[in-house]
Length: 106
Image (cartoon, rainbow, N blue to C red):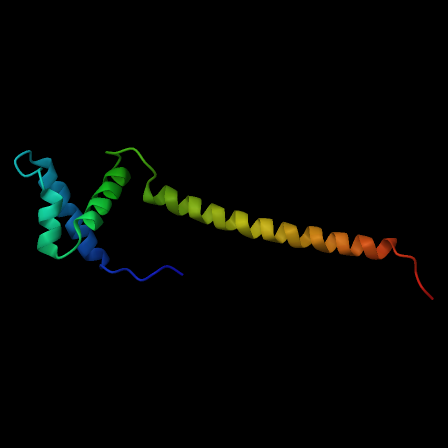
């Protein structure tokens, strides 16, 4: 279960949009993230991470998009489940094979 989010999605989207718009203008580019973060009462590094991820999702910056990261996480979870099931099956097969090899006692 994921930890609860400190900031609502609406604030995240608004802050990201504001920072991206200010960074597009050369006159306001310098320190735009810090100014927006201060206005909205959040840590600048939080906003910087959101902007970076938005740029990756938008194709402006190289990296793993949110959709790809979610897909990878689901595949890794499925892989763990399959490995666990495979281990259980191997263990039970070995147990029953050993039972068949034992001589019947009467």
